Image 1 (cartoon, helix red, strand yellow):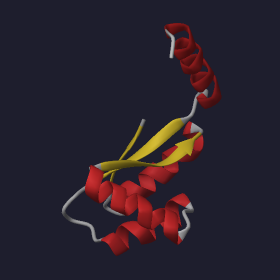
Image 2 (image 1 turned 45 degrees about the vertical axis):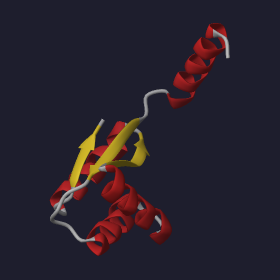
Image 3 (image 1 turned 180 degrees about the vertical axis):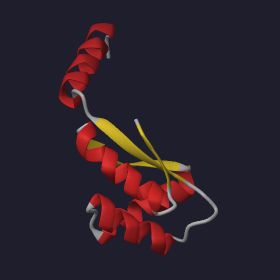
Length: 91
């Protein structure tokens, strides 16, 4: 892949993402898989399968982006994750 193609690809990707933000969930040694899964279903509106996959990624990789979107919608969701005792950050 040429340098020009790489630059064009980066610009297209940046334009598609726009001003989206992310909630990143981090691994901890406190919360159970069930608690993490139930919280992701309740707060982030994940399906059971999505929540389980995120919980596994967090466990094995140390972190996982669990939600992307507009900052105004993500702020209360991130706060709810923190209130539930999970380690999360809004980026």
